[in-house]
Amino acid sequence: MTRALAGGLGLVVALVLGGCGGDDEPDPAPAKQPLRIGTKNFTESDILGELYKQALEARGIPVELQSQVGSLEVTNQALRDGSLDMYPEYVGVLLSEVHGVVKRPPTAPAAYELAKQLEEKSRFTLLDATPASNENALAVKKSFGRRKRIASIADLEQRLPRATLMVAPEFLGRFEGSKGLREEYGLTKLRTRTWAAAGEQYPLLDSGKVDVALVFTTDSQLASGDYTVLEDPKGLFATNHVVPRVSQKTQKLYGPQLASALNGVSALLTTPVLRALNAQVSIDKRTPREVAKEFLLANNLTRAVR
Image 1 (cartoon, one colour):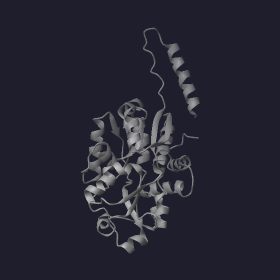
Image 2 (cartoon, one colour):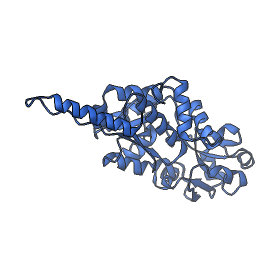
Image 3 (spheres, helix red, strand yellow):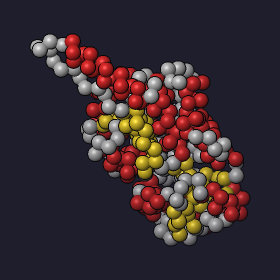
C-alpha cells in the first residue's frame, strides 16, 4: 500500500468516525504520522534502515526513511530535537560517545543494560540488540603487517609510530578514535587522513598509500583474507551490537507492534548475515532496498508488502 493511499484511507476513517459520533463523544484520535527512521552515512546503516522500515510497513505502520543523515553526532542530535523518531545505533559507541562511559562493562549484556538505563533517563529507549557486533577496528594489509611485524595496535608505537592512518572524519574527536589511541596506546605521532566515504580505505591499503585504516568488523572486504585486523589488548574498541534507538514517545504511540516488528528483524542479524548483506550492496552493487526486501521475504517478515 502506498503512503498516499494509506493516508487517504486514514482520512476517510477519521471522517466516518467523526460523522458517527454524538455531541458528547470525544473527538477521534488524529491519524498517526509516518514514523521517521534515520540512517548514518555508511552502507550497513542504510541496509538496517531498509530492513526496519519494510518490517514496520508490513505491520501497517507508515514509515518515512531518511537515509544518509550523517554520523552519530548528527543522528543523535536529530533524535534529541525530534527530527527523527528512531535510528539504528551501536551499543559501545552509544555508551562512549553519547553518555561518556569510556570504561565500559566487561560483557555485552551488561553494556546493553547500562546503555538502556541511561537512555530511559533521557526520554529514549533501546529495543532488542542484534546478535551481530560490528566493532571499530584498525587493520593493515596482511603482507604489510607481516613485513613490519605488526599484529596489534600496541605494535604501532614501537615499530611504526608515524604510520599513516586513514579514518572517518568523526574518528578524530572520539574516545573510540584518535583520543583513545593517544590516551590508551600513546600514539601521538600518527599521520591521519580522513575518507570521504567508508570503503575508500581498502584500495589505499592495497596500494600502500596508507599504512593502517579504520575498518568495521562486518565489512565485506575483510572476508577476502587480504587484511589483518589488529588486536586491541587495551580494549579501546568495544563490542558494538546494533540496537534500534527509539524515542519513548514513539514507542508509546505505536505500542507493542513496534517492538515486535523490529525485534523480529534484529534477532536474525548475526555477524555473518550482516557481512553478507553488506557485500550484496558494496560488492554486487545492489540497492539496500532490494537486499532488505529479499532478506525479509526469505524470512517471512514482509508477507504484507507488495
